[in-house]
Length: 386
Image (cartoon, rainbow, N blue to C red; front, side):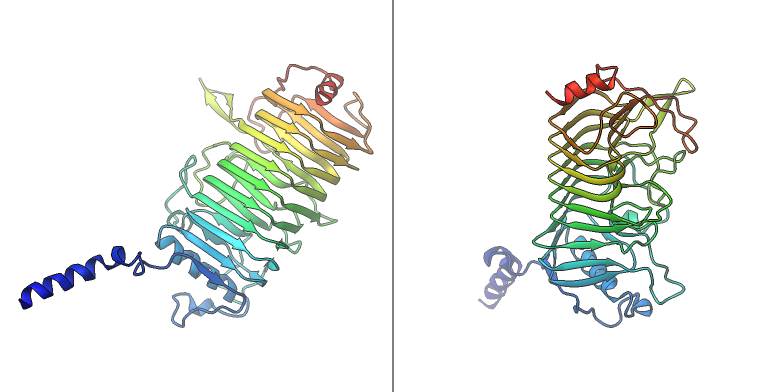
């Protein structure tokens, strides 16, 4: 009889997560605040101080969620000063509550522990922390979201080369409801070798007055050893382009460029650089671009593009086309305080349509040319009004 009771007890103990609705399952979702702490004895406790404490707290919880296969990290209202890069792995959503401020910090208080350029990398830690493993194609992190609710800001504080979010070699990334502030030479969003990206209802504003280079708020690039695209140690630099990008209902203000690419990549065929690595299926719609010092949208080697219902105000140049390919939809875009001209140099203009060959890095590649079924700016403008 005792043996029977013991057997039944063991059976119930083993099956208890199923019998009681999974109560015994490990927690996967966490909520933290600016004053949240972590236990003493953390393996990096020698680097834990007033400059790094919030970085280590968020890192600890992201690692916990990763071990559980994914989950949600919710940040409560307040200011979070981040000195080093946080790796956001597969199946993770970061929710920013109303009033969250993420601030880039350029000091750690430790000579041995240097601050990093980026705040967030979309990458599984098995690759991000490895000096040997490399990410290829779209084989890294998947199903990652950054969701803001109410007033949420990520402020780069004009720190040179700083980036807010880097998404590379990943799939299914969503960024929504966040205001990005104060870039200097870097990018707010660095997007390379990414498939299925959505950026919606975000605001991007402010570039350093003396920034020495023209940079995009959202950079669509390829990891490439010749152009220097995505120079991070965990990327294979395999020239993988972006696919299926949607940017909608966003505001770009007081920047050099809003959205764009600044270098193109090619693959070698029969000993020649001949195969273009096109960024494909790019949709940019219902956005506003105000006071762009250089260009609103800078397209290089894009294919299957839908650029519609965007508004450009007081911008030096609205859209630049270089190596853009059909199929192509370009309609109902509006321009204010710009003058359309077919002159390619010297004048303010809405649209710039030309072939191109990279100077400097990437100059080994063959020239690229547009193929949109039009040959002049006037024909392009007519297409825009349809």
